[in-house]
Length: 438
Image (cartoon, rainbow, N blue to C red; front, side, top):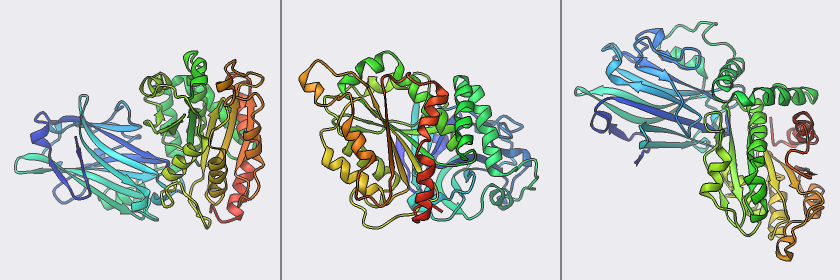
């Protein structure tokens, strides 16, 4: 596998003589739409039908098609041999949905896949951009009788409409509805097709958000899961998988990319691929197979990793002044015990008070304590430390909420989503008032 930098090129015809492959795409933490543009030798759309995206998922020749790539939130299937000679280049691009900008992006990538082989990977982050609302990721182009690929990474100030005009197409109202509405329509279709078990969960999450005036709210969503040994029964019974799907449904209401970021923590911290519509079935089972349960619990280490991912300028360390971002981060932090790094955890919570990140802590195991004295030290019934975090003094603003459950399935979907919105709406107002959010 080759990791590409901007401007780097590959001879696709040498790597994939058939010209049949897939392109996997991701843009974590930001609602975006991906599109392919089939261009002529002048760099203009050879035909409006060669703009391939959610609303026009297949080119007339079948050479470009929206598809599912395992492990990736979005993707396209390429059959270069099927493209007409009038198509000289194929550009892969993304545009931001809603009011976001590229600087709010956590991380993303374009990867070229043939079968199960990943041939090339082009990573990018929001740190490379500022107010741009669209991005040309890369282009496939004809040269010397074959096809090549170049990693581009060029930003545009406009969104989807600007890209369409740049490539010389006619912008029709029916083709480019308001970005947020178009993204919702596309997401709903993807849910019905790829994860129908989430349909009712998403509807219920929407009811709870409507109650608190957040029906059109956009945010990045992160699920942070305890993988200490005392969680074994919950993973084995499938309860963590069910809960993760409930959080994914909330993520689908907050973020139109149909995926949530996931972190695992015990003694160490792990960041697997995001949980999305295409990979949500059996997602948690695959996680614990790759990351066996561990013998310690360290909140602070996990919080530092999450902060470093969304706000890389401090790498999860001390923040001395407030930072502003276009979108907030909602972290669902799930644990069944206390932590061995309490002092670090308190520092992390205080430092993150100057960032647009909200911590929703949930303790599992009301009234339960392990028989082992060693495990009992990390699995308290009342979660006094989590309660203390909820009221921790010395923060820029109050950026956390806490509740406990006796079991992950204790509450109905409606009751759970209401609980998740207990303090978050108030925090949003505080964060905006103190300059952390627009």
